[in-house]
Image (tube, rainbow, N blue to C red; front, side, top):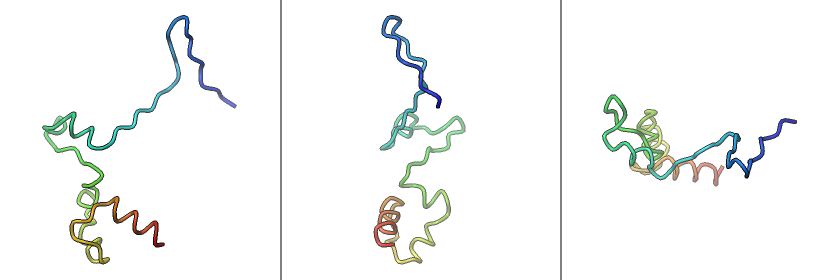
Length: 79
C-alpha cells in the first residue's frame, strides 16, 4: 500500500500532497470583482440558481429563498 512521504524535520520539508478546503465564501472574499472575466464566483448558497433548480425547489414546496444546504439537509434527514 502506498504511503505518504514523511516530514523531514532536519530539512523542514514535507513532500506530502496537500488539500486545502476553503469555505464560507473564501473564494468570493478573495476575488470580490469576480474571476478573470469579471464573472462573480458562486457560493454554495448560489447553487440552485447556478444549476437552474430554483423553480424545481419552490415547486417541491420549499421556500422560494431556500438555500441548497437547507434543502439538502431536509431531504437527507426526512428521506
